[in-house]
Length: 359
Ligand SMILES: Nc1nc2c(c(=O)[nH]1)N[C@H]1C(S)=C(S)[C@@H](COP(=O)(O)O)O[C@H]1N2
Ligand SMILES: [Mo]
Image 1 (tube, protein in one colour):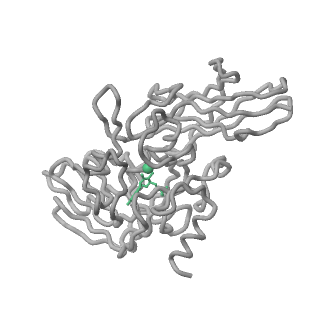
Image 2 (cartoon, rainbow, N blue to C red; image 1 turned 90 degrees about the horizontal axis):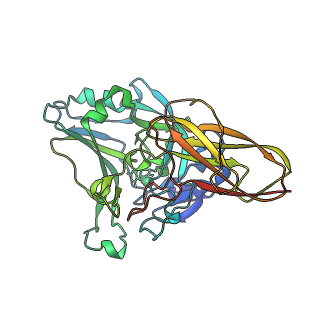
Image 3 (tube, helix red, strand yellow; image 1 turned 180 degrees about the vertical axis):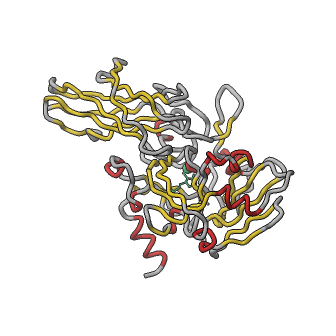
């Protein structure tokens, strides 16, 4: 089979948003378990899947520039972490006025088990110099970037996917940023960044650079299209901010949206996640009026993965019901009723609604 055949087969179970570059949501029923099977994990790529030569160059302001292969990464102590990843554009279609950007519904979020080397260990080996302030991560993918007409003032004829983190964020041993070479126990597939990619837990997916090719220590803050152009919250009424950590969010997974359930006691179940602290509270509203009832929130099974919650619903009254779930995290962040509007449509964590019929 050719790469094209392989890709086509791998992509079939997903809900396509765009064909090329391939962007696709997970099927909602795939998001009920702890782990999303690899073939059902959402995919977001700004450019077509690139050819990667299998090497990773670590350079810039370092004493010992290095070229690494997957064997070098595998030779380091492997770290395995379950990480919930959400695209910053998830939920964009629910914002009004309609923002520009990839038309995501609600399912550009998934959870996988990633295995890799710790980024800070890889960097330590290269010995960043005292002048280093940020670290730039470059993917092997590049190309012309299809821009919305209002953005046509940018030269997007050949952009490369590049992102940056501060050296302090990267060298913080608690940060556990991975250079991952396995996803759910198998080598990364092309859509998810083969042969290796960054995994930045707690951050929106954009930080987790796929097809990682270069790591460069910079002596000045990085400026670039995918860091300070796109992936910025351009608010209507205050200065722009970078898209960083995932905003707190809860979701009802059972009953499914539009489901039919028998009258009686029903255990409503769902997931909740946040990049700014564990979820400490989930509340359920049964009327759409804002009657909030406390749900049972399970403790996190790991530091970076979504949590389960449940609520015993006395669904005795036949008819159509609207269920909503609202999460709060340890930092006190709580989901808003309406999306926090911004020009490029990032970070929509507004409370979702599930319609369900009781018969
Ligand atoms: N090199 C590269 N890395 C990338 C991207 C990209 O376009 N190119 N997209 C980012 C975005 S916006 C997201 S949400 C995640 C999606 O990762 P996934 O496709 O494995 O789900 O990859 C990130 N890493
Ligand atoms: Mo994304």
